[in-house]
Image (cartoon, rainbow over all chains, first blue to last red; front, side, top):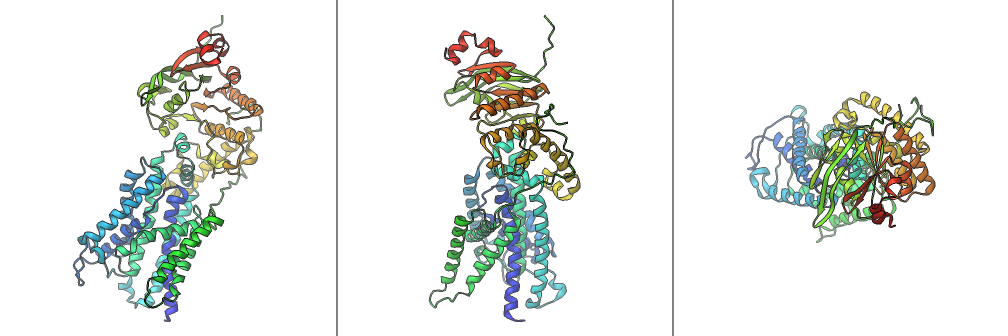
Length: 334
Length: 258
């Protein structure tokens, strides 16, 4: 197989995974207005727990240390990844969502991200510290016995299935009365409360569901790469998902697909082909960050709602019994 | 004299008190709102009107006193619980949900919608849609009555100031409240719309809706309030009908600036 096909398959797989990340963040911020600046932490927690759920018991051949090592078959590891991310979200939500509003919560999320990052790096018995875990088995490949090149196709199909399911669920939630309450909270928490909505509870649900998306996306990532370490979840990674959402269109799940294509795929991957001059190996990476930053600035200036902004909900009224007349005698509807 | 049967009280405020630091915003306030009436709450700036509104609706905690709604103690409960019990408030400055359409603003209001649970939204689509149709029919009725129907698919943030006030009233009614608490609904509204709003409130009252109205415009109060409570310096100064109160010495000096 040509290396180009191999590369394109890799990009397609990451595109699917970034869509999944994006929809979760979109539910949290685009719909509910929760400023989660540590979204990648939930991705990482999902990845690590899915990894150790799929791995053999620790201290294997490579001398890596990690907890659990349950050797569970796919798709149980992604489910575990989603659940653990949800549990972390509940814990952070209780601290952050109860009393704090947007910007203060954002500070809490940044600190939590740093704490988790430092802990995972320094406590080696958890997930093998800064070196991270590796050798996570590929889903179903004990059955197919394919080489890595051909296995890519299998994994792409798995990712597409997850992405399609993820899209159907998030779309249904977005356009349901649940999504409407979340948007009401985003617009004005006090009004939502004055209309009888338990704001904390709804924010928590949005935060948790979004984190499940992060955790499952992380689980797919580690199943694909087979390894994960703290360099995989720096603040920059959160920033890329945020950029994808803001450029594509926050509040619009289709815009999120476009954003996932533009930012992580086109800008992040595209800049990989820039020639890196000898003696300056980090130049390409720096240019990548700058390119995404510029894209964000242009989007904010010329298209602040994103390329595909949130769509207006228009109800179809045909078939409704329209009894009342304007200015009729009876004001209270029957 | 004919025997008048007084309707029972639906909202009862007893010995309410609230201080912010050393400042006593509410000293000792007691009054009742009878079912199916419009009760006015007036008073000069700083009399504690807004504090009373926030205390009743759960937006500030009180230090002392009891608030009862239809016999249930709602003192210091969370705003969403009080709203769910049937007390819906408006805000002094219209607070429409800007990036929701007029219809969506209405559709948020009903309590305990099936589809507000993410789980039910996912698996009980049919039942959720059925409920949505019911609410939609109601919302359309209200919007037609308040002449907002043509604007149904407009973002609420694009409405004029007066239309926002109408929407806020319509949205409150959509929640089927036991008591509607209107915080200065006529503030910043032109005289024509003031008359219109006044007409709506009177007619809704005639159909059994109960209002507690905080208002500065005394001619409005005189025209539509069945009973008026005058606050001054965080306490009830006097109460009765507006035309009587106009004659009262203390009220004149404290408020009417006579």
